[in-house]
Amino acid sequence: MSTKNVRLFFEMASLHTELRNKLKQLSNATTDEYIQKVIQLGEENGYPFTRKHMEQVALETLLILRNSVDVRENKLESDVNVVFNMKYNNHLNKFSNLKFIH
Image 1 (cartoon, rainbow, N blue to C red):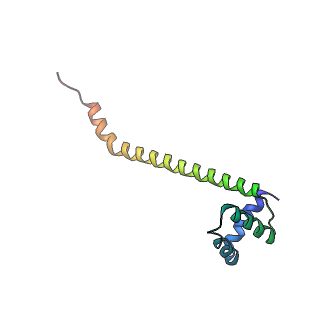
Image 2: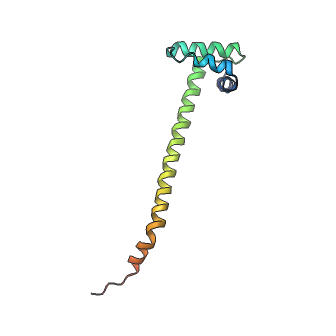
Image 3: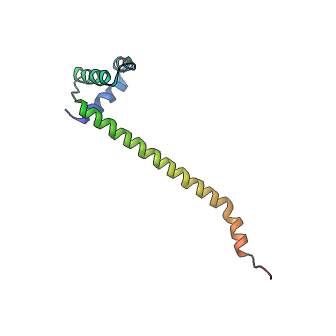
């Protein structure tokens, strides 16, 4: 049993319509019912894992998603700064080169 089995199970489920439909039918289940049924389906399909393994994979996935959103936000902010600088640097340079007469 391992987190690897959790990942392999969900990968397999994404490829098999029947199993994917079984998971979709759990949309109204409580969290505990959902987890128990997913563990059962995993075992039935040759991917044994525990609730702890499922929770670990869920946490890792959430952290990856959070980090990818942070990276995109930082990239977006960086891109905005680049565009701003490209657009307005020419104007700023003109002003900085002016010699004021007193």
